[in-house]
Amino acid sequence: MSSAGVNGEAGADLGGIHRFVVFGDICGSGTLDMAEKKLQRTAMYAAFDDAYSSVGVEPGTFHQEDRGDGILAALRPDVPPTLMVGRWIDTLYESLRAHNRGRARPLRLRIGMNAGLVVQDRHGLVGRAVDLAARLCDSPPAKRIMIEAPEVDLLVVVSDWLYVNVVAEGGRYVEPDHYRQARIRSKETDEAAWFHVPRRPAPPLVGPEPAAGPQGEPEGEPAGEPAGERAGGSRTGVGPSRGDGPTPRTGGGNRTYHVGGDLLDVHGNTIHGGFTGIRKSAAPGAGEAE
Image (cartoon, rainbow, N blue to C red):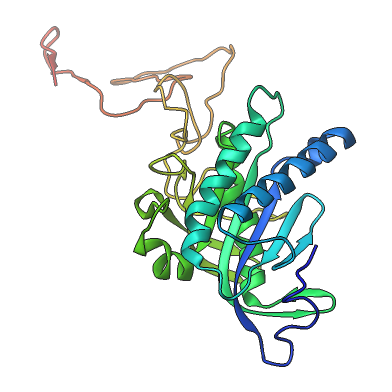
């Protein structure tokens, strides 16, 4: 669906028009069967329509492209961006909550938001503002949050420009203190971004961006986060974890020791912290704790 007022080749001869860009994606759509895909797509479009109506954006007055399991949209230049980061997000959240009530497979969305110069030709939208909105939505931190926090149905990621110039100014339904910043490094993108989960004081964002593995997936624990101390878990000190060295060998086996002095044998254990030793004096029985 695209708008009549800004459809066609609006901005193509002008080098672009400054517009608000939204990129949405359904989480885990690849695991759904065809019937569930259709159901969630219908619910996604209904939730977007509710959100547009809440800020006075009428059908046919904006550009919107179907992305299979997502939506790409560019709003008219005269749509106040404060409405989009405020009432629009709040209405989208409420629509998702109403749809998901009692459902075994809830509709969960990642939303990337940006604003900037956009060119629209007869094939669709193009511009760095569009590229960045897509990168924000599909970034490794965004995907990691949704994997590690299955109770979250809506995650919003806004560009640094949008946060500094719009979100940080506040307004009705706008909660700048509930956003958290993280670095996005994906393909040619190296940008700061701001993450937000509606109705939460902070998103479950754990640590900086991890290094990418050979297939572009996060590799190991997030950088700067102690091994085992991820959201929802804690280290118990009862066994080895990544970062504590190699896993000790277990099992039997005979040992033969030829001892000419003091001996300490630590086998099959990992020691965390300090320990108390025994210093042996020259005279028998004169040992003292140290």
